Each structure stands twice: as C-alpha cells, then as structure tokens.
Length: 323
Image (cartoon, rainbow, N blue to C red; front, top):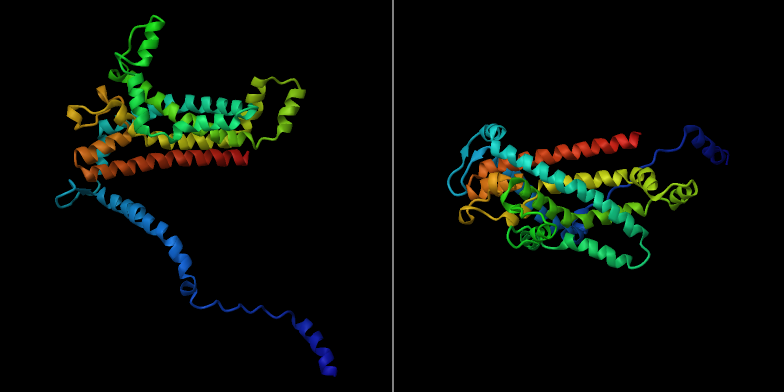
C-alpha cells in the first residue's frame, strides 16, 4: 500500500512523461486518392499550359529558332541585342505613355464614380451592373467600335469637333492621336472594374469618421481628400499596380484599333510605330517574323518590367504599414 501511495508522488518528482507521437496512418495517398484525383486536373493543366511553357520559353530565349528548323544555341546574344533594339525601347516608351494617359485619369474617374455609387440611394445594383459591363465586353468588339468613333471621315469625335467649330483630326493617322485613341479605349474598358473595387474599399471605412467630419463643418471636397483618400490608399495602390500590369500587357487594343499595314502582314502600331505596345512588338517578332528565340527574350524582358513594378508597389505598401 505504501508503494502505491508513493507512486504518484514519485511520478510528480520525476516530472511529466514526454508525449509519445502517434504513428501516422499508413497509405495516406492510397486512402485519399479520390480527393487527389478530384484536384489533379488543375495541376495537370497548370503543368501543361503554364509551368512547362514558361520553362521552355526560358530555354528558347537562348536559342535561334524559326519554329520549323533546328535550334541553334545563341547564348546571351538575344538579350544583348535586346538592350540595343531601338524598336523595343520605343515600344516600351509607347506602352508607358499610353498607360499614363489612360490609367491615371481612369483611376481618378473610377474613384469619383465609386464615391457616387456609395452614396446613391436608389438603383445601386443597376448602376454597379452598368459600370461593370465594359469589363466583360470583348476587347475586339470594343476596339472596332472605338475605331468608328475615332474615324477621320465619319467618326463621332470629329463630328463633335465640327459641331463646336474645330477642324477634323486624323486620330488614327497621327502619333499623338493614336495614343489618345488607345488610352481612351483602355479608360472606358477598365473604369467600371476599378470603380467596383473602390466601392468595396469605401464600404469598409467607418461611417463615424464622416459623421465626425460633418459635425466639424468639413465639406464634401475636404472630406474626400482628408478621409476617403488616406483610408483608401492601400486599395489605390493595389489598383495602380494591377492597372500597370494590365497596361504593360495591352495587345488587342492596338492590334484591332490600328489594324496592320502591308496587307495585314506586319503589325506596326500605326504611323511611326506610335501605337506599338511592347506585347504587340513581341507578337510581331515571334509570329510575323518567325523569330521565336528573340520573342522569348522579349517575353522575359516584359516579365522583368512587370516584376519591377510589382516590387515597387510592395515596397510602398510595406512603407505604409510601418508608418
């Protein structure tokens, strides 16, 4: 009996026994093969149409290949030529100019539209649907419509200019007019999309802040710049980087809006290559000139440009969180 009474005390002195890890059940994959089979299509498709093409494009960037003959190892010559290719850097410049002309006004209009939608009392659902329709409309169809709007002889823009006494403008035949037309198309297409994102961000701002501002006598303009914009800064930064990536990948807008020269064989982006974006230049070199190696090098250069903008956005967000 004494030994039995002192056993718990001895165990307490020695301390608790270490927990013994329970053995994992064997044959986990065999037991749950149905679940793995259910999610496998996504990974198989990603492997076939995502990971393998990306790896092959990196390999192809170091080769010379016309798509049919044998590959010839080129080393870094494709990238060295890329650094001195004036047409490529002109395309990068065109892309950034079109992005600045289209994205900055678009984001401001989207934010104003979101504020108006947030304060609307009736038909909120109808307005949100109407704003989002351009985002789900075919880019090709929209580009054809904008081609008619900016047509030199029969376009609505020149008709409006004639009404106010201003002469016609050859929108699609002048370098600056081409950039304006492409930027206007992108603005119309993405304003509603970003307005919906801003609307979601506005609904997270506490209403007490606006009530306190009204009590202090702040008007709508002061409330917008002192409360709405600072509270929406993370959302604004998100839309800026997403719009930047989208702008850097713009392709169908210039391709359909400006068409092709030489009977449709070369997509040059209009006079003086004013509308030739970097992705359109990639398309031209790869599928029109059949230079798949150089096209792969351009694709990786586009990836690096997009990555730089993403890192800048990440740094801005991190700085905001530290502040």
